Length: 172
Length: 185
Image (cartoon, rainbow over all chains, first blue to last red; front, side, top):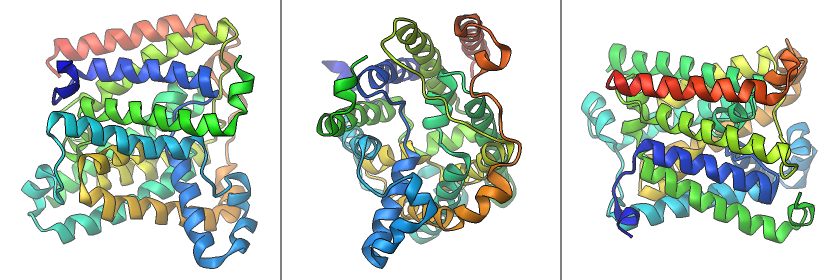
């Protein structure tokens, strides 16, 4: 069982595993793997706690009801699965600042968290604008040969590569 | 198809959790619960993300289309438009690089103990999704509906049997991965 405690697998082993997992979700749940809708539903659930049931009147939440569904459990499961994997290999560690960030912008947690917050806002906004994320479009949509998903995946990387070069080669 | 299982809400919540557990395990083992690996991909010096994604796509594409041909699965391709998919995709990309995680890998990063992901990124994604929900009625007609795609998939677009595209696409993606390895990427 040494593979369970390994720090890293070949990216191909991880990728083929995810591909096989997608067969199972199609057969057992009639669903492609996706993550970003769960964040939109959670956002709606939080807003409902704060502002009450009138939140349910919003056009967006009529389409994506703020409730716990298969995909919400999937995202929650990711946290548990990654935690288990990291614990098994001794990779679990509470930390604020990744080393590539620290090398360019310093080790202060506050700067990193503020930028992560801003990045998260753009990411959450963009994922819902595009109707999916790196899993829903980037893996599940492309494997179904969806026109929208191939375009989305290309745009994710064009935007991502341009922004990363700007952040680390111009600002950093 | 397992229609009875698909409509059993309790079972589906458990299956979702199990699938997520496996997905998170694979993401962590693949190395993409790490900001450094994701940013390394976007700066084009670490190709782990692309290798994982493309090998998942090849495996998934062959299997899911086989299951579909056998009547065991049906496809759920998303609709799209230039206004929604391209514009949203570029905004997502900016966020992807700024945050250094995506909605799936951030959950894996939280599981690995990354507090910037939990306190910063996760909160940001929820805020961003909330802002989008608030702007949705206006965006829907003004931008999202612009340049709607008339078909959902490439086989529909080219009016061919899916396998006519699946087989060469799988071959091309495998060839691309071989080429990346041969270049030492």
